[in-house]
Length: 474
Length: 131
Image 1 (cartoon, rainbow over the protein chains, first blue to last red):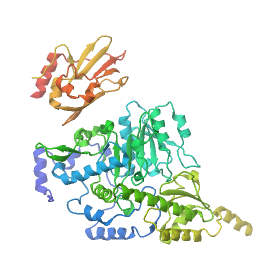
Image 2: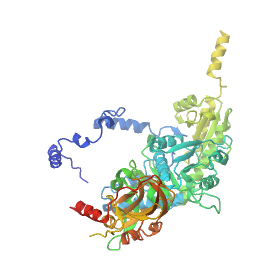
Image 3: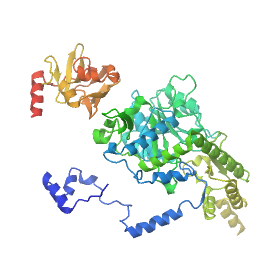
Image 4: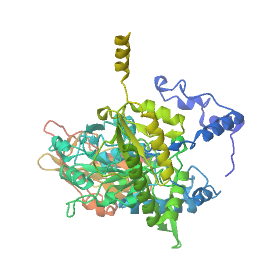
């Protein structure tokens, strides 16, 4: 596709035709007080040389440490063919082309992706992807508000076992549209969301319940009873799921006790990064969303369908576009979403290469590596597991001293030891969220355990207590 | 020339209104509107019991090329919705004034029926907008 710039003469000609003096005049209808006058934290433009150097430095900093942080982004092995194929000229674009139907190959990749996501989640229809897992939850909340027509409260229950970053993003996006997210406490012993904590909401108008599986602590929720509770109380179920875990866990489309009046979650979303997308210091990733066919018109984002052309040959097309902003304008289901063409292409290739068996092996190996990590670390004095609930590939550990200084000291030794939960979940005390995937060997785990053992070998003295001692000593 | 039955009343946003006994109305979109939209593929009607504000959205009709909101000319409560349109949206193209009705509304006690267009006035309005 050639890049054809507008010359100043072209611009002047076009403005002349519509009778406007300058480009700025095109934005006259926006009130002055709404216009951004500066972009604050966005830095000034860099030259090619400067940006090349900056990005090389950033790339060099990425992936050097031995990483035990999960918390929503997971380091999995990416088979070499994934990016060798995804970066071929035929695929290598971040965007769905305009005149989409002229690019049948691109649409077919998205169609295959949608089919795979439906199979993984057990749902009937998928969109072509969203920005990331967090914005996917925001869009899922808005989808549920549109879909649950018997509810007018716009209240969505969010257990504290849901990724706190997702909640912040959902509040930022949907909060301004009158959606209220209400926090539900978890069981300190198991790390799960209990039905008891939902009882106070029975009899009130709840639009939806969010259920994250595995939850933010890596613990498996009792999804069947949560799903049935929501439906019995007129609420829809928004499932937030890890796609790797779906290879071995019950798909959200089948959540609910056998014989439940209405089986399955209603909207399923999550972060697609574990499927062949590198950590890259935080992005770009992609979000996924699937739902029941009954709610397809409430779902945001592009959807690719398979159809027949005038000559009866199969082909692919964008479909149900009346939901989208190029037709519906301000009343579109979403005015901020797009699909993530390139990372979705990688995920589609990743899933095709691994297949159901391969993905299940990744999931089982990751769960086994995390179990080994937890065993190694909890053998150390002053380290114990926080929860008794069943785990997937993450675990919360409780330490006898603040986590942040330990993580800093581990990072100096080239180890990212996990995520400090003291800011997001202060009720847990000195809590550390750790993760090991299939990429971590016994030697890696031993290296982490050895380093941590060294750091906590001296008994911990609280800073306040130390000051007091030195005062009495003086 | 589109069909504009003389016994109905009309809005400038191309809804038709049939007065029913007991402070109720039935409404839909006009033959002109369905022709302009083209083949409908989806019709969303409100839940029974939904409260409608005068001028508020009461239904959505979607064709292969556009989606449009349908507005209630009165404040009231939905007493019936044409759920047959969910399976057969083409009823609205085929019979916009009969089988293709959208919603029946019971007017709020305090609500007054707004001034609507009669068939002649609506026909003139459609003809004028076509110029």
